[in-house]
Length: 597
Image 1 (tube, one colour):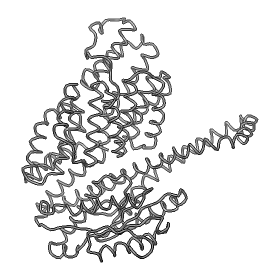
Image 2 (cartoon, rainbow, N blue to C red; image 1 turned 90 degrees about the vertical axis):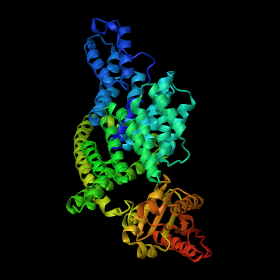
Image 3 (cartoon, rainbow, N blue to C red; image 1 turned 45 degrees about the vertical axis):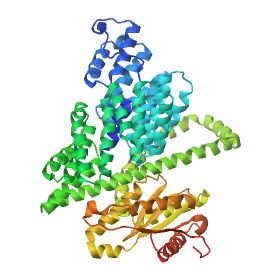
């Protein structure tokens, strides 16, 4: 939730670009009455400064409220939009969503509708209502075709790449941000689109990002007065560098960069960004051996997440605290932090899986709509008959609808509460404690749902098994602690490849599964080769103090070759894995269905 709310301010900050270049309220703002033109200017100027100067923005909202009795309908809708936006800035996401929904129903002005729908798409994604977010995008994008306002068009596209970022569809987010950049947007939106483009590349673990290009984007955003958005990219960039650091000097450089950015981050007064900074600083100081300072920053970060929910930053802060108390022999406190960290991780990764499923569901719903349109003509007779019957018993049906609706709402509420608890317990039983991916049971449940569905849809599932070569030797020579690190590092490097189709499971010990929905054997083979290379490139010395190589052997198949039985997929992939072992290990083998792998 912390990162979601961090993105919330970014989506607010990028929602509208005013055509005005000034950011001061007109000098006649204190005198009443104002002309309609002056009110328009005051509204526009308030909109302009809302991402640059929070205090001035809130002061202007107060000033605008004194003119409400002079507003026309459009001005009133614009003012309500700004006040709902202010509610969101305060972190009251649910209340803000409620305000925007009311504005959407009350105000039929196209410009306001596009602004509201765009922000709703972002906020639904932030609030975890991922399908609603995608539906809002579907609502707003067709409306863009009806307006000539270039800035409104950019706002809708901006909403789209923010939503895709929130749903971890990083490639889509990058591509949409690039489209906006290619159309030469106003300077402020160029800043936002560029920031999302590079944040997406960072999340995609793209090693080709250049330092000068990042600095160019940061300088551009600062020139536009967009310190918050600039620092969002800056902190992600420092975090990315830290994850790639292989020497103490590189860690020191990350420390110097974050220290230099500290004042600018604090100047935003935005809690989410400050928590991100504190959590990152805690990790850096821990790597530099300054453990007591690291604990101070970790505690600050943890305190900041109290009202912001579960996030990677919270997980990182808890890890630092656990490491400190474990090293200092306070095992009770260490265990408390470990339990909280594990529970937070489960909820965090469960949420990521939920995002993927929501995206895939809406994708299939969109395809279903096309077929639904074709079938409407065939249903016209039935619909006409139903309409006639409904009109004859309208009064009874209305009463019945009210009663049924009330019952449905009650049952949905009860069901929602039950499902929330069930989701938590189900996640605990289906997730591997160490790697936070599916365990064997989770994989089995997932496949038992997915296989019949894919067979019905004539969709190919690619399936692979891989295990670590000579893993027992690693455990025997370096101990089980190093062995556990190897298992986690293996999963981490494969997940960092950011293949949005890939789902991982730990089958037991050092054996893992890869499931790729709607994929060919060639796609799986390319991804398996990327995983194999990434595993072989793991630097063991920096983290463990021991220098050795990690390698893995893979066996692959698909439902085309092995059918839609999980048992057959496991058997055939295992046969291919055996061939990899027999042929020298550290390789990928595809099951060909003939026994000649």
